Length: 149
Image 1 (spheres, one colour):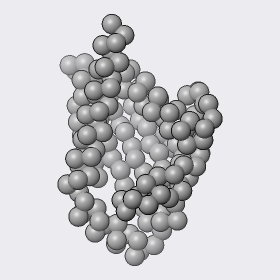
Image 2 (tube, one colour):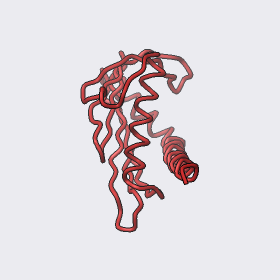
Image 3 (cartoon, rainbow, N blue to C red):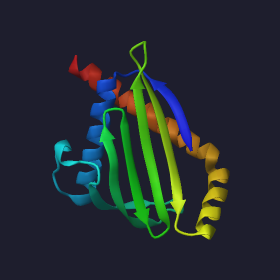
């Protein structure tokens, strides 16, 4: 699933937001303090996530890319590997175009078929959820900008 959206933020603000998001996720999962400089490609940690059925599952999270313009993380479980990715770039009018994508590589053919069916059934709610995430990102950045002025 892929969503493209332009948000009212600067490129640097989005870089800062993603870095904060990554550090906060690691600290919440591990209960350890981490600096963004410590998070390099290949950085791994374990966390609990809630699936669509509402059940908690343990996953190994791997930061694949964390650089200005690209963030990608993979979440490995016994079901397979989920990923999410933010590609972003500044537009000519000072905003940021974000290309958000997420997907799943199943551990077996039956799980892959099941995932494709569920993706089809939940595609509308998934698009809504992703747009809400991007709207909240924009709202947070603008709020932070306003409080700094």
